[in-house]
Length: 208
Image (tube, rainbow, N blue to C red):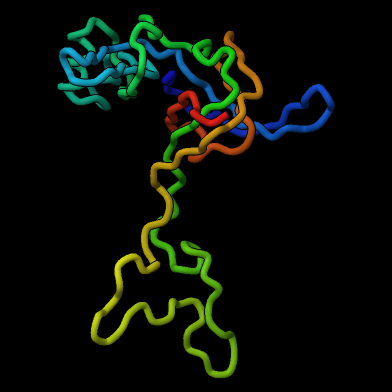
């Protein structure tokens, strides 16, 4: 599996050869240096640790803890804001640095991100409930109806108010529309989870 780290820039549109407008999300991915390699002989699985968004030493002391900075120093690498491990099938496919060119010739990718946090929300917004009657003395307008019984209480899995968003979301099988190696940009068709500027992971999709 091929993978790389990046961030979401925003959405725009491009035109295909037939003149149709295609909505795309612009992703700035890489370059990501390989910080460490995990092998089956030593670690029991194959993986690479990728760094993204290099930061200066003064800033690193404020936002990166000591053990993490020591890990970069151990491998002779500058400090990066993000460090993420991705499983791979072939370690030989990864050199000292991973760039957007790793997706050259690939038509489908998966994008993993964190959705926008919306705080504590009721059931109508969180679960798209229809709500109760608006008239005839109803006292239940936006509240959920009964969620259990007097003997058993609430059953597991009942949809209730609670935290909405700020969760890991994977957009599967997005079509690669354009690859710009000079600016480290990858344009994919459709939307990508999370706000602009948030860290995302792009991997080769198993979908065709």
